[in-house]
Amino acid sequence: MSATITVDTGPLARFKRRRALLQLAAVSISLFMAVPIYLIAVAAFSTRDGLNQFPQPLWPKNFGTQTMETFLSSTGIVAGTINSLIVGVSTLIVSFLVGAPAGYALARFTFRGKDAYQLALLFTRALPIVVLSVPLARAFLATGLYDTPLAVTLLHTALSLPTTILITSSVFLGVSADVEEAARIFGCTPAGAFLRVVLPLALPGIAASSIFTFVTSWNEVLGATILTFSQRTLPAQVLTSLADSPLAYRFAGGLVLVIPSLIFIALMRKYLLNMWGTTIR
Figure 1 (cartoon, one colour):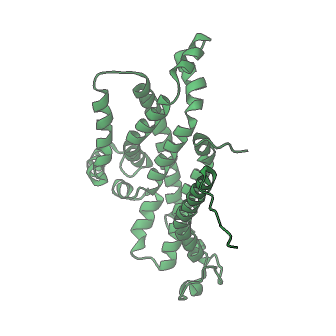
Figure 2 (cartoon, one colour):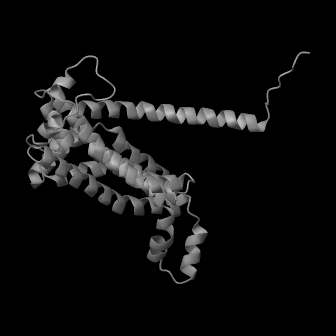
Figure 3 (cartoon, one colour):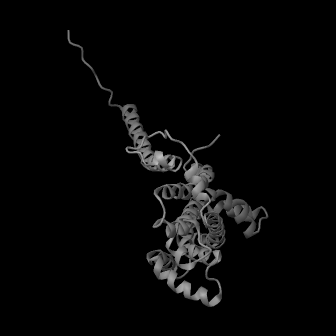
């Protein structure tokens, strides 16, 4: 007798296949992003002799902190890190204070030229950073703002505002106006309804916008190099030192540049997962 094998092609089997493919794709993308970071970390915490070995082992056999200690003790690294944090946080705050009300206005009000205004917002992102940095450098030289964290903050805010406004606008569109009207019926002022009802519901989208703003500001290097000389951010400081630096310095610099962005994304993870419908317990 011959046995007949039947393959379940029902909805449950198709769902399992799709789920398995989705998980495989997620793991592949995660490895694609995580493996380079891991290799940089291995190189940054290897001794000088271990770094010169070929081929490099996937697990560090010659662990050492000399490379990181040398990098952190280099001229301008600590000051550049502080400047980058100041610029990144300041850009985040200013972009939110300006971009959130503008996004709310786009979401709640209809006015003449609204579509043209949204299109004009994107023109700033279409311009190369050099086109913005050189005129700003001349203006900052005339006003005394050149070579200050404030100058870089203003540039990064100009770069981040278009996406902040458009992202927050789409988020506020997802918050029902009926909820806001109900809050006003029960005694809230327009500002109180926005702060107590609309803003908490929009936090996941605002978190996504804040990640983009902070990471953009932290990684931006060309404008910071043009607008500063002695008060440079960490990426600008590392870039200007790469040509004359050993390989170990470059690996350590790459790791230090990545870590703050990963920490900030980890802090915003809760709001992002809530936006995607996942509850963290």
